[in-house]
Image 1 (cartoon, rainbow, N blue to C red):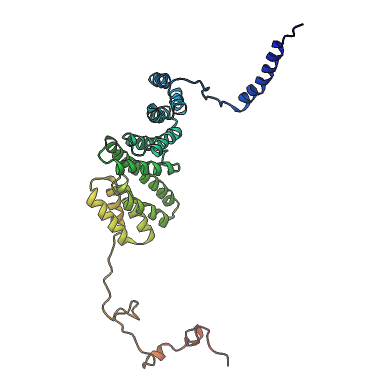
Image 2 (cartoon, rainbow, N blue to C red):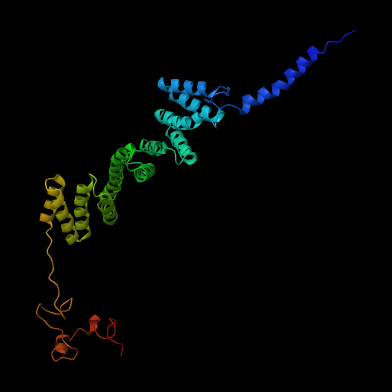
Length: 312
């Protein structure tokens, strides 16, 4: 009598597959990930390019990543890395775009497309710049990345756009300093406000915020009681931006609070003259001095250090 083992084999196979399927369902693909399907490099790259042309940027980026994952030694893998960074950028997934471009730079630093990779990194930071009321860490990173493009590839076609964006970024950073300076000024914190406005003049003097910064310095210097510095700020403002409302306001302030320079002291002249305007210092014990001071012993002006008369 022959015994058939086929049903037993099939049953054991099914039992062996169940744990594997369960593991795949629990810890395998994340939401949005593509399932691993082995395909030749030409098919993968063509499909990714088609998704990019259709505006399905997220899918395109994932398919370009698949090209690199499945065919890491193919000549298309290097191109796919850069296309993945571009696709993530178009999808506004700027963090992923920056990471993909930086990975390309680390693996292929001398490649002819490295300039574009650096440019993509700078664009990823630039597109995330927030308004001046928010933290400007990303803005500083954008300035650094754009500066890297100009420094490494000064004659490339990306450097010209990077220089333009650097000017815009610097204007934004100056705007942040002005925002903080105005905040301090409205609360009467004159020194803190002065330091912020001064930072604009020292670090961002070619930006559009310079005229206002000079006018604000005129205000804060007057509030601090240093009219000489206020006059200097107003003079610089008038010399460089004579037709602006900022200069008109600074001029009106200086007319209301004119600066009167003090003549320098002559050699040997005391800083605080004694007596009348033309009086000269009088040596102790000079006749006539004691008579003027009679009756002042009880006021604490004796040589006892302000303690009054000694007890008898």
